[in-house]
Length: 150
Length: 122
Image (cartoon, rainbow over all chains, first blue to last red; front, side, top):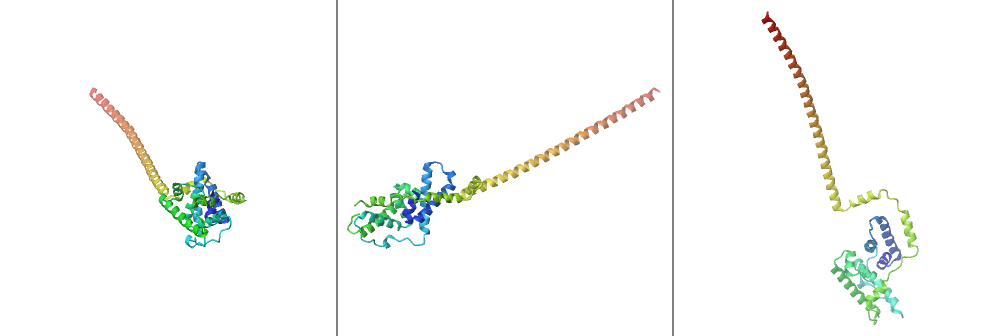
């Protein structure tokens, strides 16, 4: 979960591993304060999310807005792997928080109120952020896949 | 074609950490310096929270005031006890002197009375 959250946001296995290691080192230092398995899962998710957002914001290259993202090449014969790859790229080009909302919703399959709690955001902001991100992703992916319906 | 939400679930499927992740993590944990007095450090780290910092400062101030008040009260009580013991000593001393003087006066009176009665009989 920890590595994967970082990886889908950073799209860089080295950077994702750094984030994951920092999270587990932090856990090692604060192990005494963990009260249960549920608390551990919640703590790991929250810490991983916030460290990943920090890492995204620290990165030198600016986030590429979806509008500026380059159009993909013509899809290969089997569209699914290409589509997935492109979706991963497009998700990773979203700003830090909307990106994490999408990752938490579709990787972790969290409900909106759970995402709001993890990200310390109002639930309406989570809902609107997700809808906006999905709209942009849908538009972009439809444009780049041409006649393929998404 | 699946809807976008389904495609996102497939695209964002959980990734396993790369091989050797656990070993590298254990190496970093082993390289962590020992932390002496973890409880004390934890207590100190709690002071990092602003509300707890204010609460700790207020408690410390109250304890200091209570401590000073208790010490002063103890000193006052000691002074009162010393003074009362001095008064008692003085009173006892004065009482014994008075008894002595009264006995002396009584002896003189008895002597005078006996000499007067001897004169009368002559």
